[in-house]
Length: 271
Image (cartoon, rainbow, N blue to C red):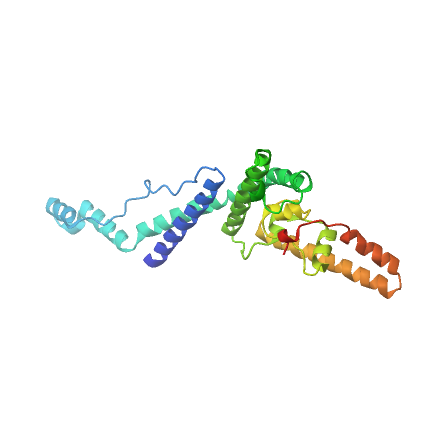
């Protein structure tokens, strides 16, 4: 590997480990260590003064002197970029070890999110039903637990997203399926409303839509969740059309009514 490539590896690993530790800091986790560079072999080039002293101290032919030969070897090793290669390898190993911790951290983040999500879901269907934005009730002492739950769930979602990206999963605009899951009926209703009524991409809107606040395993799983639910809702549409084509209108209406039954969600929270 060339010196330039080594430098790129070191730079990228330094950046990625720094980003990972920044994310860990937002959820109160200690930073992960970088590589131990103190114990790397010394392959720095000798100074001209060191070479001069060794040559003057040599007995007989300087070229056959062990100290001169040792300095020559060190000089050659330094010229090959061996130290940079060792440092790059150490940084690569440190980053690999750091990434190996992510799945366990994601599990913990998901568990915490679920706890705060329960508070938000209960509030959205209970005392605070109809509140469009938690900021509207933030000064009410009775809403303290609600405000805290929203803040913590939001921080956890952001950390979950960054950790998923650190694992190599693609990231685009946030989707509702990152924040929670829903029944097929919820999705069918959202798709067939005009305009469509999927919740906005924040924890409170998703809770108010009646969805279950529950982080998927990672970003790829969030996309799969969304695709699966939409596919199931499309199948329900097909089933309704099939019943109508068969003249079974009552059955079609009954199947449709299961989804459209009183989804009381403020339009301001939906898009």
